[in-house]
Image (cartoon, rainbow, N blue to C red; front, top):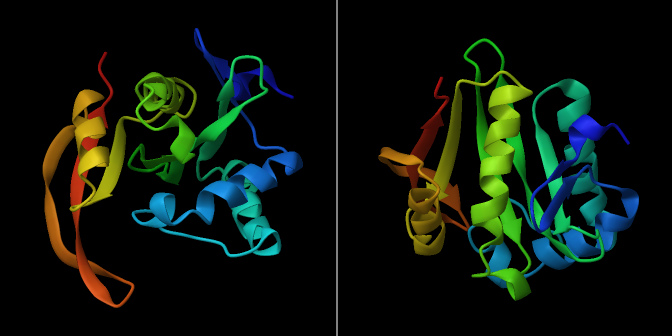
Length: 177
């Protein structure tokens, strides 16, 4: 494993996905509480392979990098987070994340997100990191504010999800010198 694709903090290990992560990815992306505000969901391990391929292709195609977020000893899988839709011309990418419900409210994202942002700014040469949050996802909106993302506005009725129009709040973090 290339060390540049592994990031550590006091209690977290962010690493590349491995095939054995599929069970945990399925556990997360089939959970109604997690997928309520997330863009994809899977009803079988087989279908979850699509997500594993997506993670791998981000790096291969240079369109981003997502990490498995784990305990420092790599024994506990907490969730996933990363950058996608990387636009090299405009030096920006979109940030996303999800955690298994057992680990909600434990400060994991508050620790992981700055690591992901620093990776984007330093390793991927980004100037801007964007976050698009469903307007009724209060927990995520609060997290974005705590992580020093600036609220830029709301795109009203901009997407259809489950047959309903939804609005998205736009957040950004700009690279500082």
